[in-house]
Every structure is written in structure tokens, then in C-alpha cells.
Amino acid sequence: MRYLTRVDPSGDVRRTMDRFFDDSYWHHANWRMFDGTLSAKVDIHQDDDNLYVTASLPGVRPEDVEVTLSGQTLTITGELKSDEQVEREQYLHRERRTGAFNRTLEIPVAINGDAASATFENGLLRLTLPKAETDKPRQIKVTVPTA
Figure 1: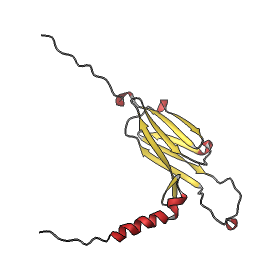
Figure 2: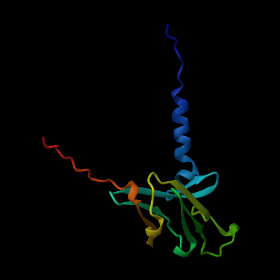
Figure 3: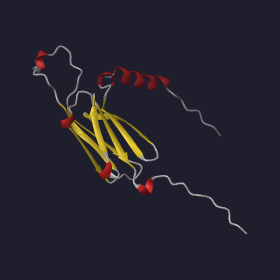
Figure 4: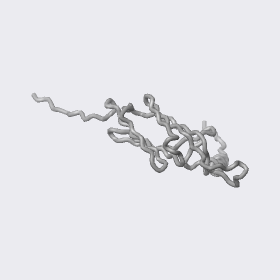
């Protein structure tokens, strides 16, 4: 026996529109917000030898960024500081956010942390994380036994 369930499509549309017009959607194009905490957006890709992480950190100075690798957990922390000395009541409109940020990622492969490197240029943090020898793909030669 089948039952009919009433669906209210306006609920989904309303939630989508609320999200679209929510301040955090427009004001944080480069930063995601979790419970009021800034979190940098990242891209991750790999080849046979390395894992590459690129984090968008617009407006952040390299000396305000810290990267740690503990086991297979990568953490990027820092602070987006305001360079202006403007009083709150002087603002007519304010969208740029400042404050501490944190992003923690679980890396899906073992990493050789001693050989990891990081560069920072034009607001992009680029990490090169060499895969541990145990996680690198290996070619296995197939042989045919002779009789």
C-alpha cells in the first residue's frame, strides 16, 4: 500500500532565497563562516608523488599564518588583521571581516612532513606535501613463468 506525502516546495525555495540574501553569502566570498569563526577556502589535488593544498587568504600577511601537520591532520591558522584605524560609529557600510581563522583538514594519505614546503604570494598559501614512500604508487612487473 502506498501513502501520499504532502510536499511543500515553497519551504525549499524559501530556505534557498534566505541563504542567497543572507549577509554571510555575499560578505564572505573568500571566507567561510562557521559559528562566527572565519575559515579559509582550500583546493587540494595530487599527483603520484605529492599532495598540493592551495588556501585563499586574501588580506592576510605571511607572518600571520601558521601551518602545522600532525600525523594526517593539517591545520592552517592565523589572523586577518585590520590595517585601518576607523571607529565603529564612523562606518557607513562594512563588509570586510577581520579576526582569527582556522582550517583543519584530514589528509587521506601519509605525508613526509620533513620534506613539506609552503609558499605565500598574492594572498595564496601553497603547500607541497610529499607523500610517504608507503603511499606512493608502485609498478609491479608481471612475469610469465617458463616451463
